[in-house]
Length: 310
Image (tube, rainbow, N blue to C red; front, side, top):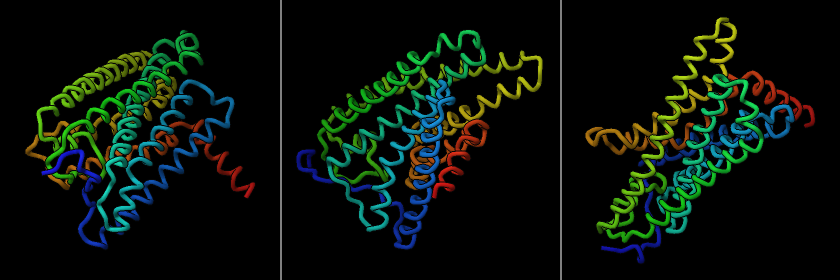
């Protein structure tokens, strides 16, 4: 038996048992991370460099790209390192830092997606009030609130999780440090405090989910009242990328954490964790770029200009 004061490192879940599969996982993670870095980097550059794209939608999209970059840079590099060097170790402080930044960026992404839903709601349902409700100051305040809320959420979960006495070893059933996996190592009823904090976070996340669903019901009702087919198509095209990103993010997270215990298995849990922690940062830029003609044109101009300079 060991306690938290004697633990100097944790053992992460290996992505594969054989050396060939470890190298394959390294190459796959490298490709996904490079795609995420390139896609989100292009979106950030295209939005930041274009003065006419400093609108609320693009401002929040820039923030979303930043959260995606932070999310994938938190979990993937260590997983790649472990696969390449055939190790499972992560230091105690490194695990705490990884958990903090993972919760921080994941929470920020969810809050930003909720705000982006509000942006689409105002744009379609209350277009005459768009400039008033979503002025530059209001957008800055909402983005700051999203990041600040994510920071407080991450700080509370990290401080509470790593204050638990740990005496069930140091092996985690996940390829990165995650709150539920660390609480499983706790040997006292103090883990109920973390469960209470998780319940509060779940209620907040559910509130955001209800707001998103309610907003899209109102949006679809407003769009269906548009008399012209071209107008309906344009309105839908501005919502579909956001709806696709929200669906990808929420469905994978909900299934990973709310699936019945009878369906739980190490391979399924690993696949789901890869889906909600690694795939959204790589797919979000592609989804938005394919559906948003203005963003696609801006990215193409940015790439063309870069190639011409070099």
